[in-house]
Length: 465
Image (cartoon, rainbow, N blue to C red; front, side, top):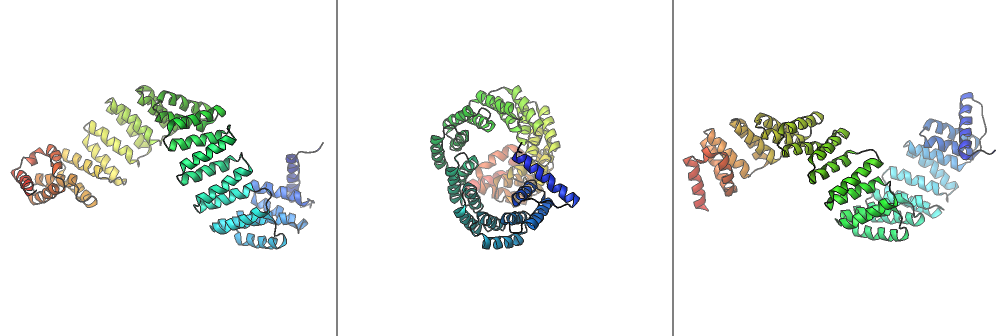
């Protein structure tokens, strides 16, 4: 009974490895050596591939294919000069061999000389019977050069050769995306669907393009066709659910997110979106359930931790919210979003020292936006640490000059610290920057705005306008 190709290969591999162990010399024809070498290359067993190439060339020194496999291995090992030397010798023997030009192109691509790589691939194309793979390689080289139109045209040619080459279809649409040509992508996909109306990939990509253009009804229709053609297409159900959310159809969105969980392993993203949908329809308990499932699935999913705490804050259950934000910080203490929420919750509970600690942590971690400095200074004022509040505001003033929020606060603090000259200077600057804002600060520092000097300065400013 004849052996299958796979069985033959196993026999040749076994025979070859037996030869290496026993030092016996067995004869293999060049095609058998090619199969042995390719097996080792495919499985990343470089040392055995080298031995097979050497023994193969000992038995078949004139085999171009074996030498090509040798140069391929050298390219894989980044021994480009040695590989190029072999290819140049082979080119003199077989100038019409497409594989020589393909490997030459690979060398230039490795050296980031992509235009040269393209030139060699175009030469290979002229000698190739099967053109699709080379066209795809040309497309990839153009992608390296960010020449998306040229890349797209070559991937499109792949589809002309093989209409079911979905990898090339994805690349065509990727190129349209990179050029922001979503309408053109839609036209291309509609033409493709006219030729192949049962292509779930094309319908799925069409839905994505409509979604990007915020044409959600059309996107939904495309995703409906996708899942009708392929009931196991997880990505399509996910995109359909996202589209239903945009259409405020939260109940049906939940159903589709749940389908993705049934079809595949659950994802934190799906759990989170389900939680958000339940939150939007007022099902708080179910929302909390799915937010908890999210952080269990992915403890680093910061949006879910924040959604959890916000849900408890909405119900004024601040201690419960604090429990969860503390858990989040325990997992990722470098996340400034967590420290901001921690500050907000502690402010609700009048735990001002903890609020100050949170804002200081934000600054240490690089979140030094104006609102953080203002928040920290206000808390320090509340607990009577006016000197520290002034230091924070001076630092903020260097980063954000000519800001009324800073100038008014510094003026008030200096008046409290009985440094009248500094207070006067900052108040004058603040009034020039934004007169109207003084009404906001007046509520925070009523005693300062009761001072005769402060009222005189405000009156003088009004008269000077």
